[in-house]
Length: 208
Image 1 (cartoon, rainbow, N blue to C red):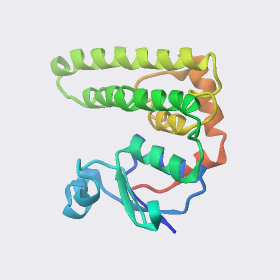
Image 2: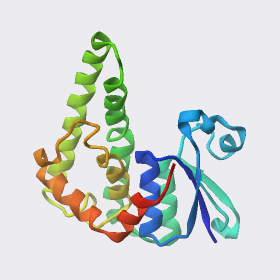
Image 3: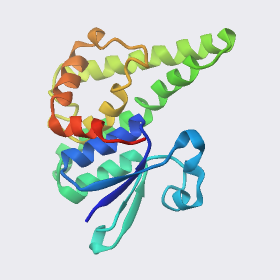
């Protein structure tokens, strides 16, 4: 049965379109135009109580019953559990997937998002402090990722949902004012992921 992905063309939305393509799950996209406030519509609120995209509705959820899931990290874990793909069953092997997924959710997303915000602030006085603060932290996070990828092909060893989560934000590196050439291990990882047909299909999917 076909999953409905409620989303917009954002890093968090792309995490899920990539995962769905890589897992070969049929899905349709219901666009939620966040530039027009559609995320605050009552129908969307029922499946995403935080009024944020993305969210999914799976008509074939646990026990064969429909289920909705909000928050991109929760969606990735759900899809990994559902398919048995990109999420190890062994707890020891799963730990780094969870660590790096939480790393993305807690830092490598919220912090670059602040760079996006302060770059758009018109007042130089208001922009300068915030942009430097969050740009410095964004570069620190890229450095953390680069050091990790010096020792492993993907962030958790094997390809996992954590890579899809991080890729959604690394996709916007130019907007973060980050040159991937400064982080050669990230560059290698990024290019390897982009060479995958499923990733290409996930980014080609129309989300707006």
